[in-house]
Length: 255
Ligand code: BEZ
Image 1: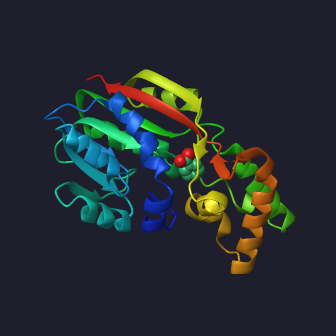
Image 2: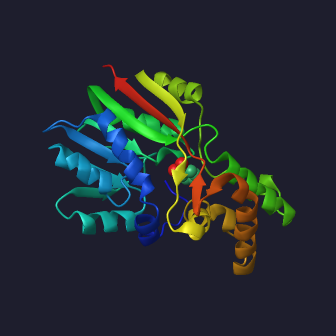
Protein backbone atom coordinates (compact mmCIF):
# COMPACT_ATOMS: atom_id res chain seq x y z
CA UNK A 1 0.00 0.00 0.00
CA UNK A 2 2.75 2.44 0.93
CA UNK A 3 5.75 3.45 -1.03
CA UNK A 4 6.77 5.72 1.80
CA UNK A 5 9.30 4.25 4.18
CA UNK A 6 7.75 4.95 7.55
CA UNK A 7 9.70 5.82 10.64
CA UNK A 8 7.26 4.61 13.30
CA UNK A 9 8.93 6.58 16.12
CA UNK A 10 8.76 9.83 14.17
CA UNK A 11 5.16 8.99 13.24
CA UNK A 12 4.19 8.46 16.88
CA UNK A 13 6.21 11.28 18.44
CA UNK A 14 5.81 14.15 16.00
CA UNK A 15 2.63 13.41 14.08
CA UNK A 16 0.09 12.74 16.78
CA UNK A 17 -2.34 15.00 14.90
CA UNK A 18 -2.94 12.12 12.46
CA UNK A 19 -4.89 10.08 15.00
CA UNK A 20 -5.90 12.90 17.34
CA UNK A 21 -8.01 14.44 14.56
CA UNK A 22 -9.21 10.93 13.77
CA UNK A 23 -10.91 10.73 17.16
CA UNK A 24 -13.57 13.02 15.76
CA UNK A 25 -14.20 10.53 12.98
CA UNK A 26 -14.91 7.89 15.59
CA UNK A 27 -18.08 9.76 16.52
CA UNK A 28 -19.27 9.27 12.95
CA UNK A 29 -18.45 5.57 13.17
CA UNK A 30 -20.19 5.24 16.55
CA UNK A 31 -18.80 1.78 17.34
CA UNK A 32 -21.25 -0.43 19.21
CA UNK A 33 -20.48 -3.14 21.77
CA UNK A 34 -20.04 -6.51 20.10
CA UNK A 35 -19.75 -5.15 16.57
CA UNK A 36 -16.91 -6.52 14.46
CA UNK A 37 -15.00 -3.59 12.98
CA UNK A 38 -12.08 -3.46 10.56
CA UNK A 39 -9.62 -0.57 11.03
CA UNK A 40 -8.06 -0.22 7.59
CA UNK A 41 -4.59 1.33 7.69
CA UNK A 42 -4.39 1.27 11.47
CA UNK A 43 -0.81 2.58 11.73
CA UNK A 44 0.48 2.13 15.26
CA UNK A 45 -3.00 1.30 16.58
CA UNK A 46 -4.16 4.34 18.61
CA UNK A 47 -7.60 4.55 17.01
CA UNK A 48 -7.93 0.75 16.92
CA UNK A 49 -7.64 0.85 20.70
CA UNK A 50 -10.28 3.59 20.96
CA UNK A 51 -12.70 1.49 18.90
CA UNK A 52 -12.01 -1.49 21.16
CA UNK A 53 -12.72 0.66 24.24
CA UNK A 54 -16.28 1.08 22.93
CA UNK A 55 -16.72 -2.68 23.30
CA UNK A 56 -16.36 -3.51 19.61
CA UNK A 57 -14.28 -6.42 18.41
CA UNK A 58 -11.73 -4.73 16.20
CA UNK A 59 -9.04 -5.90 13.79
CA UNK A 60 -6.39 -3.45 12.59
CA UNK A 61 -4.62 -3.97 9.29
CA UNK A 62 -1.77 -2.04 7.71
CA UNK A 63 0.52 -2.68 4.74
CA UNK A 64 3.62 -1.67 6.66
CA UNK A 65 5.04 -4.48 8.83
CA UNK A 66 6.88 -1.99 11.06
CA UNK A 67 3.58 -0.23 11.87
CA UNK A 68 1.93 -3.54 12.72
CA UNK A 69 4.87 -4.57 14.86
CA UNK A 70 4.55 -1.30 16.80
CA UNK A 71 0.76 -1.63 17.04
CA UNK A 72 1.12 -5.14 18.51
CA UNK A 73 3.71 -3.83 20.95
CA UNK A 74 1.45 -0.91 21.96
CA UNK A 75 -1.75 -2.97 22.28
CA UNK A 76 -0.86 -6.66 22.70
CA UNK A 77 -4.46 -7.52 23.60
CA UNK A 78 -5.75 -6.44 20.16
CA UNK A 79 -5.78 -8.18 16.80
CA UNK A 80 -3.48 -6.76 14.08
CA UNK A 81 -2.30 -8.08 10.73
CA UNK A 82 -0.22 -6.96 7.78
CA UNK A 83 -2.46 -6.56 4.70
CA UNK A 84 -2.57 -4.47 1.54
CA UNK A 85 -5.75 -2.34 1.36
CA UNK A 86 -5.91 -2.82 -2.41
CA UNK A 87 -5.56 -6.59 -2.25
CA UNK A 88 -7.03 -8.31 0.79
CA UNK A 89 -9.82 -10.71 1.65
CA UNK A 90 -11.48 -11.55 4.94
CA UNK A 91 -12.84 -14.86 6.16
CA UNK A 92 -15.80 -13.32 7.95
CA UNK A 93 -17.34 -10.01 6.80
CA UNK A 94 -17.42 -7.02 9.19
CA UNK A 95 -20.21 -4.84 10.60
CA UNK A 96 -18.21 -1.74 9.69
CA UNK A 97 -14.99 -0.70 7.98
CA UNK A 98 -13.20 2.36 9.36
CA UNK A 99 -10.25 4.19 7.80
CA UNK A 100 -8.45 7.34 8.91
CA UNK A 101 -5.76 9.20 6.96
CA UNK A 102 -4.75 6.28 4.78
CA UNK A 103 -6.66 6.13 1.50
CA UNK A 104 -4.70 9.07 0.03
CA UNK A 105 -1.60 6.86 0.04
CA UNK A 106 -3.09 4.26 -2.29
CA UNK A 107 -3.14 5.08 -6.00
CA UNK A 108 -5.64 2.29 -6.81
CA UNK A 109 -8.96 3.55 -5.39
CA UNK A 110 -11.16 1.06 -7.27
CA UNK A 111 -9.19 -1.93 -6.03
CA UNK A 112 -9.43 -0.57 -2.47
CA UNK A 113 -13.17 0.09 -2.69
CA UNK A 114 -13.76 -3.39 -4.11
CA UNK A 115 -11.80 -5.01 -1.26
CA UNK A 116 -13.69 -2.96 1.33
CA UNK A 117 -17.06 -3.86 -0.22
CA UNK A 118 -16.35 -7.59 -0.12
CA UNK A 119 -15.14 -7.28 3.49
CA UNK A 120 -18.52 -5.92 4.66
CA UNK A 121 -21.81 -7.52 5.69
CA UNK A 122 -25.02 -6.40 3.96
CA UNK A 123 -26.37 -3.15 5.51
CA UNK A 124 -23.01 -2.37 7.10
CA UNK A 125 -21.15 0.95 6.94
CA UNK A 126 -17.87 2.27 5.61
CA UNK A 127 -16.65 5.39 7.42
CA UNK A 128 -13.49 7.10 6.20
CA UNK A 129 -11.47 10.29 6.18
CA UNK A 130 -8.53 11.11 3.95
CA UNK A 131 -6.98 13.93 1.96
CA UNK A 132 -9.36 15.54 -0.53
CA UNK A 133 -8.89 17.67 -3.61
CA UNK A 134 -6.63 20.62 -2.78
CA UNK A 135 -5.04 18.94 0.24
CA UNK A 136 -1.61 20.40 1.12
CA UNK A 137 -1.79 22.58 -1.97
CA UNK A 138 0.64 25.23 -0.71
CA UNK A 139 3.18 22.65 0.42
CA UNK A 140 2.98 20.78 -2.89
CA UNK A 141 3.41 23.95 -4.96
CA UNK A 142 6.45 24.92 -2.89
CA UNK A 143 8.04 21.46 -3.22
CA UNK A 144 7.58 21.40 -7.00
CA UNK A 145 8.70 25.02 -7.31
CA UNK A 146 11.98 24.45 -5.49
CA UNK A 147 12.61 21.14 -7.28
CA UNK A 148 12.11 22.92 -10.62
CA UNK A 149 14.67 25.54 -9.55
CA UNK A 150 17.03 22.68 -8.73
CA UNK A 151 16.57 21.30 -12.24
CA UNK A 152 13.99 18.58 -11.54
CA UNK A 153 10.79 18.85 -13.56
CA UNK A 154 7.42 17.74 -12.23
CA UNK A 155 6.72 14.90 -14.76
CA UNK A 156 9.66 13.04 -13.23
CA UNK A 157 7.97 13.28 -9.84
CA UNK A 158 4.20 12.83 -10.23
CA UNK A 159 2.17 13.81 -7.20
CA UNK A 160 2.62 10.89 -4.79
CA UNK A 161 -0.84 11.06 -3.22
CA UNK A 162 -4.47 10.47 -4.21
CA UNK A 163 -6.63 13.48 -3.29
CA UNK A 164 -9.99 13.10 -5.11
CA UNK A 165 -12.91 15.49 -5.26
CA UNK A 166 -16.17 14.51 -3.56
CA UNK A 167 -17.85 13.84 -6.89
CA UNK A 168 -15.04 11.60 -8.10
CA UNK A 169 -14.90 9.53 -4.93
CA UNK A 170 -18.64 9.19 -4.34
CA UNK A 171 -19.12 8.19 -7.99
CA UNK A 172 -16.54 5.45 -7.56
CA UNK A 173 -18.29 4.24 -4.39
CA UNK A 174 -21.65 4.13 -6.18
CA UNK A 175 -20.16 2.28 -9.12
CA UNK A 176 -19.05 -0.42 -6.70
CA UNK A 177 -22.52 -0.76 -5.16
CA UNK A 178 -22.33 1.58 -2.15
CA UNK A 179 -24.99 4.09 -1.18
CA UNK A 180 -23.26 7.28 0.00
CA UNK A 181 -25.16 8.80 2.92
CA UNK A 182 -22.66 11.50 3.94
CA UNK A 183 -19.82 13.26 2.15
CA UNK A 184 -18.01 16.47 3.01
CA UNK A 185 -14.83 18.23 1.89
CA UNK A 186 -13.42 20.66 4.43
CA UNK A 187 -10.30 22.64 5.27
CA UNK A 188 -8.59 21.45 8.41
CA UNK A 189 -5.35 23.33 9.00
CA UNK A 190 -3.16 21.10 11.19
CA UNK A 191 -0.70 22.51 13.73
CA UNK A 192 2.59 20.65 13.41
CA UNK A 193 4.51 19.91 16.57
CA UNK A 194 8.17 20.71 17.24
CA UNK A 195 8.16 24.44 16.54
CA UNK A 196 10.59 25.49 13.83
CA UNK A 197 11.30 21.86 12.87
CA UNK A 198 7.62 21.11 12.18
CA UNK A 199 7.69 21.56 8.40
CA UNK A 200 10.99 19.70 7.95
CA UNK A 201 9.58 16.78 9.97
CA UNK A 202 6.40 16.85 7.89
CA UNK A 203 8.33 16.75 4.60
CA UNK A 204 10.55 13.91 5.79
CA UNK A 205 7.54 11.93 7.04
CA UNK A 206 4.85 12.58 4.43
CA UNK A 207 6.79 13.91 1.45
CA UNK A 208 9.76 11.58 1.49
CA UNK A 209 9.08 10.68 -2.14
CA UNK A 210 10.12 14.25 -3.05
CA UNK A 211 13.48 13.65 -1.37
CA UNK A 212 14.32 10.33 -2.95
CA UNK A 213 17.24 10.45 -5.36
CA UNK A 214 18.59 13.63 -3.77
CA UNK A 215 21.85 13.76 -1.84
CA UNK A 216 21.71 14.70 1.84
CA UNK A 217 22.94 18.17 0.89
CA UNK A 218 20.25 18.57 -1.78
CA UNK A 219 17.58 17.39 0.65
CA UNK A 220 18.64 20.00 3.17
CA UNK A 221 18.63 22.66 0.48
CA UNK A 222 15.15 21.61 -0.70
CA UNK A 223 13.70 21.68 2.81
CA UNK A 224 15.22 25.05 3.69
CA UNK A 225 14.05 26.61 0.43
CA UNK A 226 10.54 25.18 0.85
CA UNK A 227 10.39 26.53 4.39
CA UNK A 228 11.42 29.95 3.12
CA UNK A 229 8.63 29.94 0.52
CA UNK A 230 6.00 28.72 2.93
CA UNK A 231 6.89 30.83 5.95
CA UNK A 232 4.67 33.81 5.03
CA UNK A 233 1.59 31.58 4.59
CA UNK A 234 1.97 28.55 6.86
CA UNK A 235 4.07 29.69 9.83
CA UNK A 236 2.37 31.57 12.62
CA UNK A 237 3.65 32.45 16.09
CA UNK A 238 6.38 29.81 16.08
CA UNK A 239 4.19 27.00 14.73
CA UNK A 240 3.97 25.47 11.28
CA UNK A 241 0.48 24.76 9.97
CA UNK A 242 -0.12 22.12 7.27
CA UNK A 243 -2.84 23.23 4.84
CA UNK A 244 -4.83 20.03 5.13
CA UNK A 245 -8.14 19.53 3.39
CA UNK A 246 -10.07 16.37 4.15
CA UNK A 247 -12.86 14.27 2.67
CA UNK A 248 -15.10 12.48 5.10
CA UNK A 249 -17.57 9.91 3.89
CA UNK A 250 -20.10 7.40 5.14
CA UNK A 251 -21.25 4.76 2.66
CA UNK A 252 -23.59 1.85 3.17
CA UNK A 253 -23.46 -1.58 1.62
CA UNK A 254 -27.10 -1.99 0.75
CA UNK A 255 -27.40 -5.70 0.01
C1 BEZ B 1 -2.69 14.25 5.14
O1 BEZ B 1 -2.74 13.59 6.18
O2 BEZ B 1 -3.54 15.08 4.85
C2 BEZ B 1 -1.58 13.99 4.19
C3 BEZ B 1 -0.93 12.80 4.23
C4 BEZ B 1 0.06 12.55 3.33
C5 BEZ B 1 0.43 13.48 2.42
C6 BEZ B 1 -0.20 14.66 2.40
C7 BEZ B 1 -1.21 14.94 3.29
